[in-house]
Amino acid sequence: MKKPVVAFVGLGIMGRPMAAHLVRAGYRVVGHSLEGVAKELLDLGVEQRPSAMDAAREADLVILMLPDTPDVEAVLFGPLGVAEGAHRGTLVIDMSTISPVATRDFARQLAQAGLRFVDAPVSGGEVGAKAASLTIMAGGSEADFAIAKPLFDLMGKNVTLVGEVGAGQITKAANQMIVALNIATVAEALSLAERMGADPARVRQALMGGFASSRVLEVHGERMIKGTFEPGFRIRLHRKDLRIIAASAEAVQQAVPLTAVCQQLMNACAALGAEELDHSALVKVYDALGAQAAAPAQRMAA
Image (cartoon, rainbow, N blue to C red; front, side, top):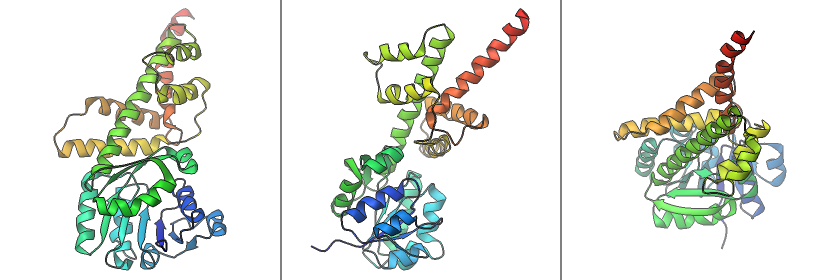
């Protein structure tokens, strides 16, 4: 059976390797990105188009991988957007992380234009995108998910249809809440251990063998100890996700106090100039607080 033509809009840090997996599997991919299609993708065979409309016009499936809710709205419904170019029956798959509330509204608008929609945000960052090991959380009909799944299987390893449209974004929100809380807890615990005179590397090693063990403690705990914060997932993007969660929680009048604390910690980290670092750099807030606490004692000793 002939493979569908895929339009891929948003070929940045995440979208670039994801699109590459599809091309290598034999899909024809037409791409559009504000910064232009990278040479490595052009060399692989991705065909560049000047707008999302032009890319969608040639496609059976449209994949979006964009930074935020307004970006998705503009690409779908703005001038030269997907809705202007896609033919009726085209399946639009949004793999960005955006508002669940807006996602459902976008799906309704697309349905009125005769277009189908699946929301399928991902977890795993740039490393997972390159390794095709992303966790993909999908919301949509079973029929649309069945069409999208062969592509998802080329980009990820843990692929789940969670429920109807919007369920993917709700699941991603839960993921980002849990990850943020874990990072904050690991940063707080290792900072306290060091402040009290213990070697944080040995503390982490001991905890890895117990009930406190987690992927965050393993990976991000090591980054905190070594001070290596090259971004896998930037604080700027995690802050964006927490803002989306706060707005979504407010819309349904649900309290999320622990997430709110993490949001303020990440805001403080951004104020320290660390917004473009990996989210494990949240530990810098505790470092700054520790330095402030030590300053009066040092002045008194002097």
